[in-house]
Image (cartoon, rainbow, N blue to C red; front, side, top):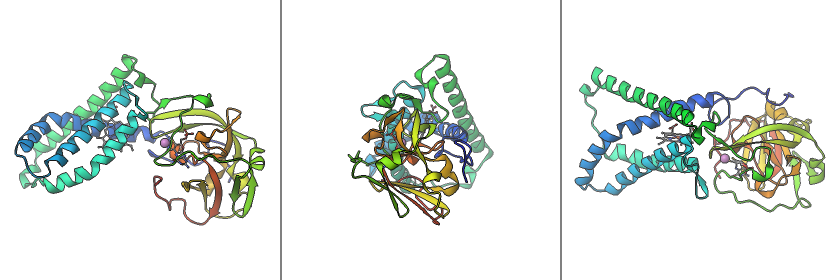
Length: 319
Ligand code: HEM
Ligand SMILES: Nc1nc2c(c(=O)[nH]1)N[C@H]1C(S)=C(S)[C@@H](COP(=O)(O)O)O[C@H]1N2
Ligand SMILES: [Mo]
């Protein structure tokens, strides 16, 4: 059950920072750019629709604005021309605008139904679709080449699309949260870590000195590598039995992992040889190598082992 860091069974897909993440992004960006390729035609149709002044016209216009805002923010991020928009990252604007557009997009196809005719399924339309997708793929490839050739900041992105920030300098590492969690001020003296039915004090947890160099890669578009120190989870839960391990925050935020991964997960109390600060999860935060930032539970207060399957959880945190 003990895995040296990095050798745990390799997870895949976007929620993990492993190689297949690159491919899901290439497909994703190509589909996004296909929308861009179609914009000239769509804008002609839209102009006619808008002048007809139909009910709920505002909803169609809002949908258009959200999609355009998301596309612009996505390209601002990828080129690195704009990485921060006030307190937000361009990537956060990209994702929030895209998600906000979803209900309007569903409404749009329902309310503005286009009747599909048998003649629409033709060789000609198939070829048109192929031309749109390949133009988008070419645009994506060309974009990546231009970003590198012109040495735009975007050339420095990691394979997940994220930018480096404050690596090996804890004081410069960005502070981020998934959605609504505020930074709690937890006192070391009163804090207890509940592990099953045991309770550990701050000093007991901080006495561990397991170390791992790991990269936190936030879906908001930055990554930061630090030397983390604390207690490996397999050492904390060694007498406990179950198939999964649940890590719970002071705020209620939690994530569940397969028990086999316990040896590569670290409950960190320090980074770069200094204690965590409240923003980064003081007194203790999870370090989950090769997983995206939202798995790195901060302000941990409890660790549980039971037989609930590790996949029995929302794929993304809900708070
Ligand atoms: C309407 C939905 C969406 C569209 C049309 C869209 C489109 C795009 C486009 C055009 C780019 C820029 C590609 C480039 O020029 O390199 C991009 C980048 C990106 N998008 Fe989206 N996107 C959407 C939703 C999302 C969502 C929901 C997420 C995440 C949960 C996301 C994550 C990303 C990431 C991480 C990048 C950066 C890729 C890189 O830097 O290489 N997108 N997207
Ligand atoms: N309790 C709690 N832990 C959390 C979050 C949160 O909102 N609440 N956000 C996660 C996300 S999305 C990221 S990217 C990292 C950010 O860690 P940092 O602030 O140390 O950079 O914490 C993770 N741990
Ligand atoms: Mo994040």
